[in-house]
Length: 600
Image (tube, rainbow, N blue to C red):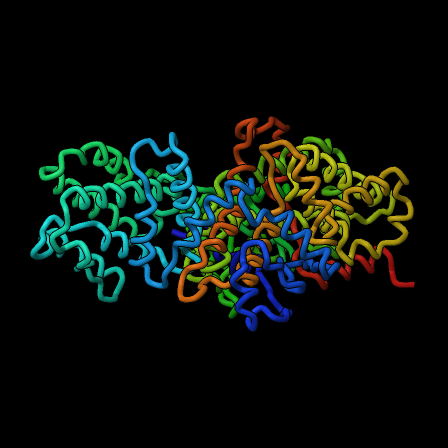
């Protein structure tokens, strides 16, 4: 089940990777493409586009290319490790999943892999493959190839349980699936046993690496359950598989999933909404009471209405459950009075607007930053490394695989819009100046709390055109706040491929929250600058570069200081941050800006 509400103005805001400019020589020179690890530089031109903002590499040329190659960690941590492991990666490769798996299993070592250099290299190569296989093959293809590499116990024909797998798997995959005949000859019993154990080792590593992530795929469920059955049947002939059986038994059990949080958009009018942090499947009455408390209106005076883009309306009953699959892309939620009139109009309801400003000005900036970081961390810690690969290469086909990452990107956009909304809804000049000062301090506190994602969102919210044009307001901001704002802007400066940010983030101790759009941009640069296949073989050096970038998520989530500890803050601030009021209409924001400071 897709846990993100798809109604509420249609759908989530997706970060889109836009590659608009061509670079010379990427497809013409085979010598350039073959040196895809160290020799290939990123194309100087593609931009990373997130709704409501665009970052463009302003500095092009050799300096930008060199900085990208240094800062995106395209190679392993040490030159010695890279030199040793590159030989294994160079030996790998083929276009067919069966051949790729066969070569990969030849490199797998059994028996205390952590204690030998060869074992460490094997595990590193396996980790690269399991993190990035989506670049060139689907999960269903990998399941099929793994089954084909598991030797049959019968040399004459597949065992009955193998036939059961074929029909079961074909019903899910809707295309013919054949068992490999490579191992059905007169294969030595020991070699067959080793191959079985290697397949199990790979599957155990795979499920341990991304267990919750995999169980969302029906092909994986069928594959793991049937593979466990095969191992159980082979136990009589190979008693030494008992240890592997005990490990595979744990992975054959589907993990219990908790009801995950979602960001539900509840519109107050046609141009603004509340971003409500709630659980998937929340009852309409519970959501209505939470919204009523936030807008300071009695719940009995309000109703929830689902409005389609064609104009149809449906009044929701208190017991209705708002599952994400119910809120389709053609509907959005509105909360309104019982006569179906709007709750708050940003141009006329000055009383409510003034009350919101007073509430924001009364909050402690450190506690606001803590609430933003706590909220961001609850999402960030649930992001799986493979989500970055799935989002970049196959997000349209498997959006349920990128729930947490998509939620994090959506939250980024909302924080940015919230900052602009709060400033532009403040009607008086002196209070508007105080608000800008508060947001500058909040951005500084986010940096101190190692939350660079929110740091970027707040600074970019203050840098929107509708806010920066308020010259009278900015003139009255004290010099020390302008200086602090300039220092924070320097960190978010995209020049030289975000050199200032990369240097600053590298010095931060973990755990820490990175600027996620930049990681996605790095993966795209690696993908666009290096061919997936070279001479009809998979380019494993490219996969290693992508895996190295993806592994930064794991390093940030759990560094040497351990996992992030949720900090305490006041309930009032937490509720305020959990229910952000956002105007997402750019024209409305500009109209508010011109009302505050008309054009001369």
